[in-house]
Picture 1: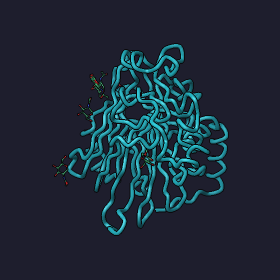
Picture 2 (picture 1 turned 90 degrees about the vertical axis):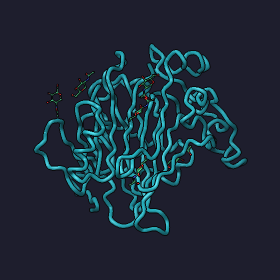
Picture 3 (picture 1 turned 135 degrees about the vertical axis):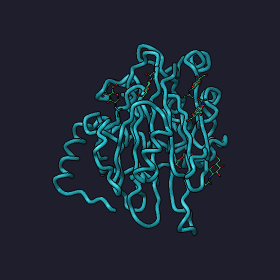
Picture 4 (picture 1 turned 30 degrees about the vertical axis):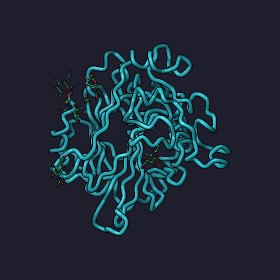
Length: 324
Ligand SMILES: *[C@@H]1O[C@H](CO)[C@@H](O)[C@H](O)[C@H]1NC(C)=O
Ligand SMILES: *[C@@H]1O[C@H](CO)[C@@H](O)[C@H](O)[C@H]1NC(C)=O
Ligand SMILES: *[C@@H]1O[C@H](CO)[C@@H](O)[C@H](O)[C@H]1NC(C)=O
Ligand SMILES: *[C@@H]1O[C@H](CO)[C@@H](O)[C@H](O)[C@H]1NC(C)=O
Ligand SMILES: *[C@@H]1O[C@H](CO)[C@@H](O)[C@H](O)[C@H]1NC(C)=O
Ligand SMILES: *[C@@H]1O[C@H](CO)[C@@H](O)[C@H](O)[C@H]1NC(C)=O
């Protein structure tokens, strides 16, 4: 099913975005500044994700449209049983396990998927949470049925999380700056194979290291196809991250990449630098991030084997935790 916005809905969306200018602007900003995403921008237009509240078991899951449902706990198998019962297409589950040692109980997820064939996109968000999705401690959010266009598929998506937020996803640590730890993915019909779908995905600290992540891509029998984990401790961060790069608001919560810290073309592989030398000529930077998180990109175009390719992926589980 294709999503057409009615004028009233479009107006509501615009009004909503006006209120969320900062989060949404920051989101688009972060996309614009992330290297080879240029060709695959999430467009400004978005289709709001349908809202389902926890424990509303009677609410019908839309078969052909995106939805979010929250669950108590982080039991992926249980959530997948629900997803199977409701024939959910490509369930993405975000979990915020407990306890987070007082680092703000809530996690806010800023995520979306963009349909490259149609120039439309879906935001995974709740209406009242600053353009993000609030996932309280010891809960999970299931997002599904967002690949809703018939025919060949070509989608790009990204996920970033913030901690230390309140329930409205305001005042998150580092919220003033758009760039954080990212999970990025691309999902498409395999060229030349109409019936096969494939996914590329990676974790990236190119824009800064702000959260730990444990991401697994599953096949249809719930076997793990690929698995990535970044999981440094705050003590390790304080030891390895250069003093100038320590990312703090009061307390240290992450480590800035050189690109994020300096914004220099040679660190971010953009602008004249990239034009003159080609992006592949970009120098290594932020090696301290590679030391802390070998499973994630720490500088653009780094070729350290952190991209996963999976045929026939059926579900994704992303567990995020603050750096403790
Ligand atoms: C989740 O937990 C809350 C608080 O314990 C409870 O009120 C709610 O009914 C639970 N929801 C589900 C779906 O179990
Ligand atoms: C997390 O939630 C699950 C499901 O509601 C519950 O059984 C478990 O006790 C909770 N764990 C913590 C540490 O609160
Ligand atoms: C990570 O994956 C996304 C989606 O496939 C891709 O657009 C991005 O370029 C990748 N990141 C890097 C640093 O290559
Ligand atoms: C990552 O999550 C998977 C399950 O989703 C779990 O089996 C694994 O132990 C976790 N890895 C770490 C290092 O915590
Ligand atoms: C799913 O992956 C597991 C390995 O993690 C494998 O054993 C199983 O055969 C796969 N299932 C399918 C249907 O490919
Ligand atoms: C991170 O590592 C610690 C032990 O070093 C483990 O207890 C925890 O489950 C891991 N968390 C994730 C999200 O992988």
